[in-house]
Length: 207
Image 1 (cartoon, rainbow, N blue to C red):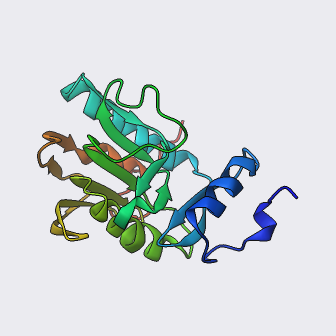
Image 2: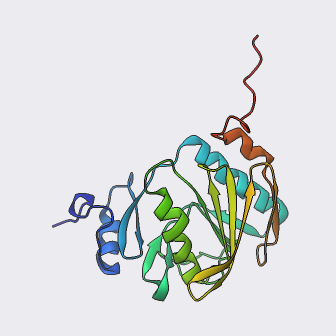
């Protein structure tokens, strides 16, 4: 019998082997992740979400032309790499994933990026579970763009499954990303995608 997403509800405990079989046979319109032993359905991104990821990608390539921000690249994360995630962005040198299958090791990855979605699972998924999974995998920098709070949170220095450093910036701030990324984000453009009326752009003038 072919597995379907109906066979497993989100948050169900399952093995890596079960997950990979399910992920291979799931519809193309569904993106699945295995976070902390739980099956997660990754939300479909909206337009602002895509614009923010493109904004990060452009700044990274302009400052570090040898790097690429890969969209939804499958990674083995967590302790013993027993989780499976598809970050919104994965920063690595060009050619890093050549020859890999569906899931890559976190070796030589410089940064993962997540942009929060406006749903009830965001708090646990992006702010806690995926953060800890990336730290446990030894990924040096995790950039969380939190659309609920109009903020950028930079996590760095992973140690014993946790990031030792956390720095929060607001939309419009200059955001230095620590080594090995060594990129500075000018985040004024993010105000265009703000939910907060204090930072949202003014409406267009009447014609």
